[in-house]
Amino acid sequence: MRRRTVRRIALYVSLALFPVTFYYLSPYLIILGASEGIVNGSFLVFSSMLISSLFLGRLWCGWVCPGSALGEICSRARGKSVRIGRWDLLKFLVWIPWIALIAIIAVRAGGYSRVDPFYETVYGISILAPGAIFVLFGVLLLISGSDLLIGRRAFCHYLCWMAPFMVIGGWFGSRARTHLVKLKADPDRCIHCGACTRNCPMSLDVEGMVARGDMRNSECILCMSCVDACPVKAIR
Image (cartoon, rainbow, N blue to C red; front, side, top):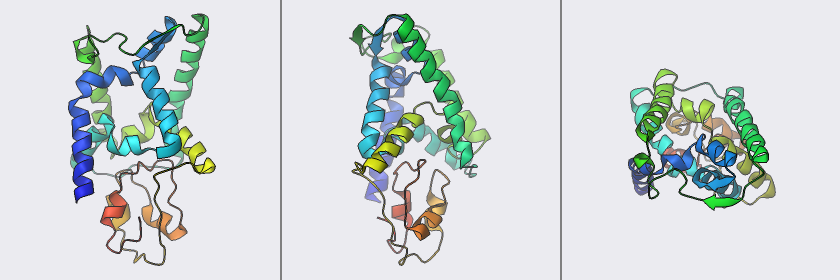
């Protein structure tokens, strides 16, 4: 209960601060910065996601991301599980062209020449920038709309431009064994009640992962919901 409470508070604080921070998560501003040779806030944040995921996997998604907080709220209204597996690769169809575009624009601009973490913000606050309210509304509509129309955490699975950084970093971290936070399962303890799978916000087959004794999954956001739901502590 304490862990769930701390996690929810962290997520809701992140969502409350989203009007201040959303330019630091902007897929467009990093393109605009690249055209001017500027390493901006979103460049720094996305880079930190990639590096941190080598050690923490997708902990950001489960505990800090404002989009995740909005997903938690939407899942109460639309708790339908979504299709996962190969469908999760859809977000890379967004991410790969986007990264290629950033690289091309940066090269044409002659590379990066300066750093401005507060680029296009007003004193570091996103919402005070001209037109920012419309951008914020569009992002909130994209996240909540996809979750409500398709199902639980559809945005995280299919559309999120931030998740691939952590999927890639987590993949390398898993193979390099640099992960500091990870789940482990004891298949012999499992009573096959299905509580772990039912409580997974990402619609993962957690019970199957426990049966295999391998809790690694690129879509796991380390929210610990399965740990808290298991009545026999088969997951830790």
